[in-house]
Amino acid sequence: MDDQILVINCGSSSVKMAIFSEQGEQLHSALAERLGQSGARLVPDQGEPVALADNAGHREALETSIRWFRDQGYLDAPVAIGHRVVHGGEAFHGAALLDERVIQAIEECSSLAPLHNPVNLAGIEAARELYPGVPQVAVFDTAFHQTLPRHAWLYPVPRRFYDDWGVRRYGFHGTSHQYMAEQAADRLGKTVAQTSIISTHLGNGCSITAIRNGESVDTSMGLTPLEGLVMGTRSGDVDPGLFDFLAGKGIEADETHRLLNRESGLLGLSGTTSDMRNLLREADAGNQDCQDAFEVFCFRLARYIGAMMVSLETLDALVFTGGIGENSDRVRARTLEHLILPGFVMDETANRDHGRDTNGRIDAPESRFAILVIPTREEAVIAREAATVAAERARDKNMSN
Ligand code: ADP
Image (cartoon, rainbow, N blue to C red):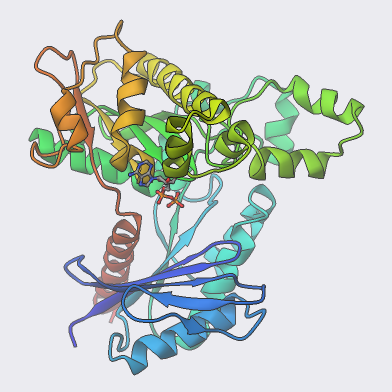
């Protein structure tokens, strides 16, 4: 079997796993879902779901999944394992080989991402026990945004919030935005260091990043992934005065947190769905709340695209990615209707075709800027980073021998 890289992405109640070849080709994948609940199961990309023990946790899910991959003959001993880690704080500007020091630093970032870092660490711990000799690499959602200039990451709140608690903009979806910069450069025939783009990642979570000469210089998510654009169940930006207003209504901070993270965004506005596909279906059937949700989503996205231009001197392309960005010609079209003044003009046919016949391009000839649709491949980037860091370690080891 050729050398393989295993990618592990632990969410709050799920584990996504993917096996890549060293050339970056995804060979197999599986999703363990409903963890910690009844009906926990493993759903492979091919074949039937496999039941996991009721209330199976991350560790059990990983063990069962890896055994299953092996039994199918899909996985031998991987040469590297890449872990998605949500929060790297200011400690990590790139991927890091996991050792005790790095694990401790990830633990220290847990207070900034209490829902994410502990489950990421559970996956790391389980994988290190299962594969003690294999180099394991943490790839951070935040690392790409560590190039943000100070004026873009400081919040205008009392200084001690940052000094004492690290309250600042960190930004997320870094692997996806970084990949967009690389892909856009490739398609435009430039180097990444020459390329400036606005990258919109629109999935269940949504964020937008301004990338100047290959570096992140502004981004919409902040201290947490709640800030910025309208998302599936997250509100994005709201008036901070809302917190005090809700407190006056007897709604406590943890309930406000839940309402803004889980019951807002498209779900909150529509009252029925967080899923853009369903939302559009119901909007077409005349549901006014769904129409409102669509309009607010597109308007706020357009407003942020305008805002991101402030951080750039030139713009090579506006890029759409994520489940919505890649697949919804209607979201792209409506959003760009708000952006006539800066000069974005779409080609309707190319947009309807999601740029498939035009190397991702969906801009009309008279558009001031290129507009691209590019599928994201976060797992592939994690695999690549893991392979690179593992190879560097092997080289260092050889040199010191
Ligand atoms: P995640 O952030 O969980 O990885 P995805 O990137 O898969 O999520 O994006 C999920 C979103 O993409 C959902 O809102 C889904 O409805 C939307 N989506 C997928 N296909 C389409 C489509 N053809 N039209 C509109 N929205 C779509």
